[in-house]
Image 1 (tube, rainbow, N blue to C red):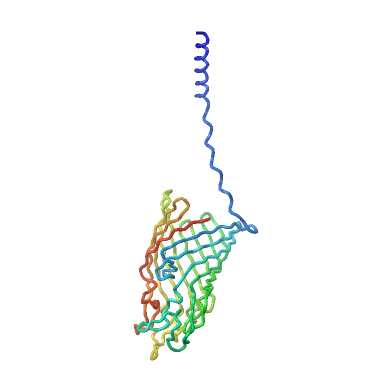
Image 2 (cartoon, rainbow, N blue to C red):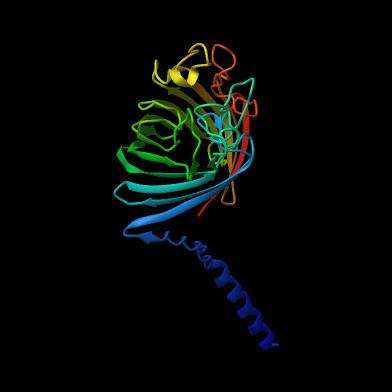
Amino acid sequence: MRFLTTLLLSAALAAGLVAQTPAPPPVAPPAPPPPPSILGFAVTGSSTFGSQYIFRGLTQTDGKPTIQGELDLVHPSGFYLSTSLSNISWFTDQNAGIASARTGLGSPAAVGAPYVAGKVNCASVELDLFGGYKWGFAKDWTLDVGLYRYLYPGTYDNLGAYRNPATTEAYLGLSYTWVSLKYSQVISANTFGVNNSGGTTYVDLTLAYPLGESGWTILAHGGKTTYSTKANPGYFFNGSTVTGDNSLFSYTDYKVGIVKEIKGYTFTLAGTNADTKSRAADNDVTVYENALGRNIGKDQVTFTIAKAF
């Protein structure tokens, strides 16, 4: 009996001590390892699959799917270097003829001078190289300045009225929390294959507004592309009259969308519109109407899935 009483008292005392002992703090999950680095530059990147590739309101793949990759080197001082890769079709989809007699720029068919029968063009990849400096000069304020080089590896044997689409831009951007404003100006002789179009500018305002801690973000964007006037009249000569100049390539584009991050993947659904002109004044010389008869601007809907690494 004395043994049983002693056992019960010991159990009660042990229970009291356990009740008075504070629970240990939860163990924090281990911090993610820092990204790899090269010469002090952190190495990061991303991959993207999309229903199509939209650039400044223009479809670069004629509404077909795209696969893209990007690699970024970022230094703590603010300097960065990046490269990205994507499939495209817009250049060889262009109409080397007129609306009433379409011929793709990638076709070997002869469409009359200055094109040559049997010669072809092929450009199916876009390779971008860009770099610059970002300066956080005040709380939530960032200044971004740099250069962008658009490259299109391929074959260019039959350009006729077009030029190699490789383009170089200088840019200056200013951002505050979820609002950014950017000005870009072409410093190469031509802009995306348009002859005598150096100095083309692009101004865009972008808003990416996060909805609290929900992981949802609202996107809104507006941009303006401006080509110089009274340039490249030869492109707009229809055989009897000049129907315009490079100012017909100027346009405004808009985008609205939603973004959701789920388990490290970023899902984006966006609608875009560009007020691009299909044809010149004679309704036969094409501007943004490709050889398939489609205006590569206008209303577009795009869905993308991106993964950072």
